[in-house]
Length: 593
Ligand code: HEM
Image 1 (cartoon, protein in one colour):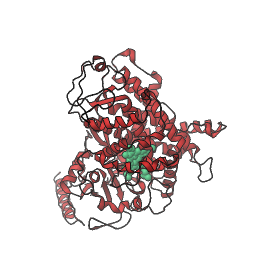
Image 2 (cartoon, rainbow, N blue to C red):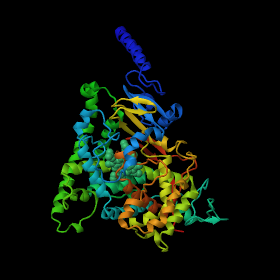
Image 3 (cartoon, helix red, strand yellow):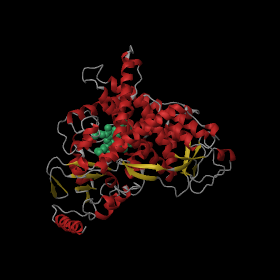
Image 4 (cartoon, rainbow, N blue to C red):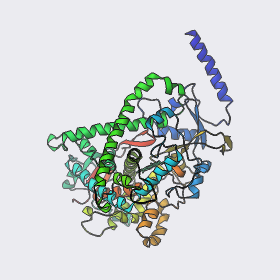
């Protein structure tokens, strides 16, 4: 015992001696031997309630560039855009959403550690997000970009979203109303904004009992999470996942109102569980184990056993998806005409390259990895962003009513709440788009992005070696005075310069609309919601279309306020995302009064 204590003592002295002599010392919290700053960063905490907040506190304490340790791995944090400009190099040269044909993936090619596990999951060579094989990554990324920008695919996903939203409304209709409604800060008002003395009036005096009876309290983050899961799984697997039905049944006290068919729910529950465990596993490999000494990966039996269940679920989930792909491929081969086929994500992936010469088709396994990328990257990002949009709309009612006005102006038809629309009209929503951007500026759902230097590089006045891990703090960049005027203010107007382009875009054809107008490329401001460089999000146009559709569906039919004025979203940073786990709001239909 004494010997162990003695050895630990000696090691600690050695550790801090080495630490004091490190190359390029930067400010940062003092690391502990063996675990570095993991404890402070919250990565090892069981309750997982960390902490984008904590990370952002580090930024306030240590400034634009600082360092932390994950086990023994040193991580350099960049919090100001000019320090990250090397990573923007490719971004400045060409649009990141165009098809990639550039062998040079400088600064953009991040390597994950824990290679054994990654190899076991095959994600190092398949799909997109984790892929480290250049040609395979490039091929899959290009396929994804082509498939998710197909006009037929976009039309269909917007129609599906509207269908699915009707289902969501059916559940909301069956939820009990709030009997009495206390109007303590903002208010729900009839129709779109009421103007008084030329300004939007937020004070709502509601003496109408019938209206009160339609007010429902919901946890919007849970509903939207289920909604997004259902829509994505349906487009990706062509199977219904019944998450909304499941959630409804969980919260419903009145047994007569329960929905769904039990056996299907059971089946989908299993599927979803396997899917969640798969995601959880990637998350472990993605962030929590960075820098874990090799010894643990190879020999730490308990660790391996602990994760075994997740590995099993990962492959069971993979097998389920593979069966779905095989069944759909055989169905497609019997279809006489391609134009009769649905344009869901699965069909588009399977069909890719089969009908033209420019690309080869994806194998069944490759389709599965693409499906997993869509599930892994699409659901959380969209649903959490939507929850934050709702939160900020509630915090700033004038902004909410202005969005309603813009949406109402799309259609003069009195019955517009029930009309279906195509994605084409979404390009006209300048103000809504500005709000979505401002929400993603002030609170980006994906607050960090990591890279490994593959060349010696000068950052912040220091030269860093190949292999150095760098975290680019998008949240900090988005809230930095260096780039933004009054960054702490929630002000969608800062993105309204796009109005200038309105006239020009009237002339654009349908293809141009997809490429130019949903997520416009000429930023005057460094908004990196969708990441930086060549490995930034390949689906940003799709994401914007989905978010706008959801905003239109919601705001043309509902008004919303926070449950009470102190309500805040409950956020858990996990799987590289700021996950909104709870956001209680009151909603009321706008058309029924
Ligand atoms: C609001 C919605 C979204 C946001 C904010 C978002 C954000 C991001 C960010 C920041 C990255 C870069 C990650 C990094 O550098 O480490 C990324 C990558 C990626 N995203 Fe998205 N995303 C969104 C929606 C989607 C959707 C809907 C899909 C799929 C349909 C998707 C698929 C991907 C993929 C495959 C990558 C990896 C790209 C690569 O490594 O080459 N994302 N996303």
